Image (cartoon, rainbow, N blue to C red):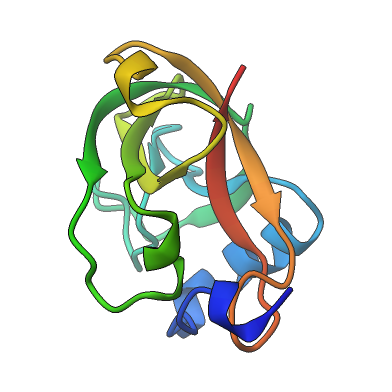
Length: 140
């Protein structure tokens, strides 16, 4: 992949290392509370539902639905500007708790996107300037 097509390097924290490792394996993993069973995104040191500190990373079904989206026409200086207009979607996953993740939605025309559109995770290997795998979405 040419350097101009790569996303800017993510700035992982210690809490999200398992997430990035899972993406490399083409697995979508989220934090889950071992006390109440609630899933959460983004990673935190404690459960957002019951405040327990017993959390584990668990694989989840990579299918979800578009909760909301925007079609970006304005260049903002990122590597994928040459693909404008492009779609950024917030996808909701059917897990205990409310989990929504944002990412680029590919493989669908802007006029065909709608709230409730079924999508699935797509894993873009080498998608950053340090060869990290990034999460994108495509229609099911």
